[in-house]
Amino acid sequence: MNVKIFDTPEVQDFLKTVAGFDQKGGSERGKKITHRILSDLYRTIDDFDITAEEYWSAVSLLNALGQASQFGLLSPGLGFDHYMDMRMDAADQEAKRTGGTPRTIEGPLYVAGAPEFESFARMDDDPDLDGETMWLHGQVRDTTGNPVPGAKIEIWHCNSKGGYSFFDKSQSPYNLRRTIIADAEGRYHALSVIPSGYGVPEGAPTDQILKMLGRHGERPAHIHYFVSAPGLQHLTTQINLAGDKYTYDDFAFATREELVVEGKRVEEHVEAKQHGADGPVTEVVFDIELSPTEKDELQNRHKRPRAMESESQESQLAGTATV
Ligand code: DHB
Ligand code: FE
Image (tube, rainbow, N blue to C red; front, side, top):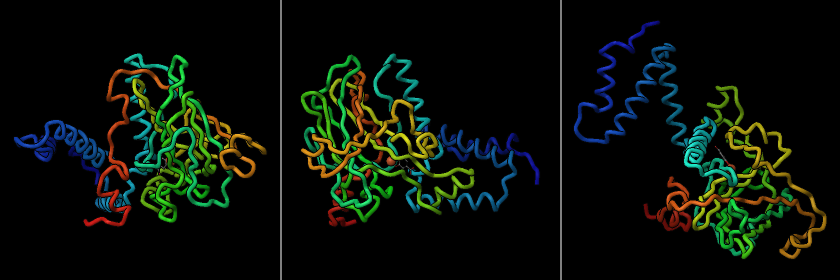
């Protein structure tokens, strides 16, 4: 079959009907966007002579993705998360909001409501026998170099096996997830375990799509951050640990040169010891610079559905869900 029908009036009229152009109700923006996406897909079917078998296998794969709640996992792999970052970077540039630590993707594995501490937090609730002890610290400053006392720093990362608490039910709910309020000098400290790299689950729908593209689903060892303070631009970022096989080959496209940090092994770290470390530590230092802004919407993280940000999920965790 090698028919080309996309440009016929019949198909063009049909697309308008499908997108609800002739209907009064609904959302104008939604209709236009749907019309564009459907047009691009119809054209793709025509141009590549997509067979019925190919089409229905794609439908089935999308069902499997949804069933496994993996759209959020696939999204970074297909570069959408990084593309959104590129657009926000460009908007910052245009508005002359320059400087500060670069943003990079949030990823799909944040959980709201982690325990909060002042200045220092121990992050590991569960034993991790294969894990190296991590002593992680830094200072939050504004772009003129002034420390930011009371900055709110949310940190989350996976364990030495690449699993994130909440999603990996073998871990305690907030293992390796903490909120730290910076001290009077804008400093924060955490005792934790060095995370390993992360890989999308083998054989899962996301993995099948990446394999079809000849790609892997691996991320380098990384640590996620949300950092915020009044009058400063909210920052979503990560650090990538240097020396990982995937530091510069991240399937989620989150690595940025300024965010690659080298861990340093210290046999006897006095401060870490005072905070409970009982052997050598790998010290990771990450200072953060925030840009000034008066805009409320830039001082807060953007809205998106996040685990534990709704009441029903909180009661689910407590085992009291009724629906
Ligand atoms: C994915 C996992 C992560 O830990 C992350 O930071 C980004 C993306 C993922 O599975 O898509
Ligand atoms: Fe991650």
